[in-house]
Image (tube, rainbow, N blue to C red; front, side, top):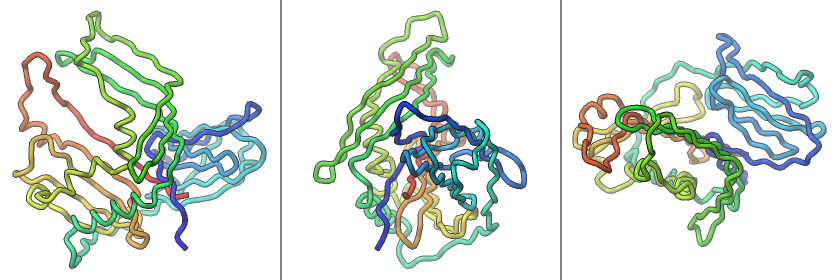
Length: 299
C-alpha cells in the first residue's frame, strides 16, 4: 500500500514541542566540496518537526528525549541519525552527492502536458489535510527603482479541506516592517492575501499556465531524467515567443513510480524581462525579478 503523504512547502514546518526542550543546530555540507546544502528537509520524528535548511545549510530544531532525525534532499543520499549523536549545540553533517551525470531525454507516447496534468491530479488527492504549517516570509519592495520597504514575519496556517476545496486560517506570531526610505509608503505598493498564497501552493494553482488548453502553443515541454537523482524525472516547460509577457520557465521534479510531484520551481528569465517595458503610470507595478520554489516532502 502506498504511504500517506504530507506535502510541505519551502520554508514551512510543523511545530509541536513542550516548554522543556533543548535546541540543536545542524549544518549540512556537501561531502566533496564542503559547500552548504540548501533546501534539505529535516524531519524530527518525536516532535514531528519538518524543517528546510537555509542558504548556509543550517537547520535549528528542539529536542525532548532521544529520537530519529531523517535528512533528505533530491540531490543527495538521505540519512537517518539518532539525536543523541548530536553532542554539541552545532553539528556539521556531510551528505554524499547523488548526481548521476545523466541528462537523458525521455520519449513518451503521451504529451508531457498530459503527464503533468495526471501528476497534479494524483498529487492533489494525496495531500494530507488538515495540516498545520508554520511559515517564515521575507519581502523587499521597490519604489521608483529603489528598495523602499522591508517586511518579514512568522505565521501559522491551519489548512483544512471541504470537498477538496482547500482553505486556510492564519495567525501572525511575529511581524516587523521597516521603511528603507524617508518617504511615505503608499497602499498600492503593498497588499496580497497570504491565505490565498498557501491555498495556491497546496492546490498547485501556480502550474495552471501549463495546464490550460493552449499551453502546448505557448510552452515547449520536455521530460528528462533528473540529473541529480536518477530515481526522479523532471519536466521542463520553457515559454515560446507566442507566450504571454512575463511567462515563467518551469521545472517540475516528480517520482515516475508513485506519480507524485516532489518539487516545483519557476523563474522569469532575464531574456523575457528584457522584452517588457517598465510601466510609468501611477498605480502600476513593475517586476524586476520573480522566482519561487516549492518542496513537497513525503513522510
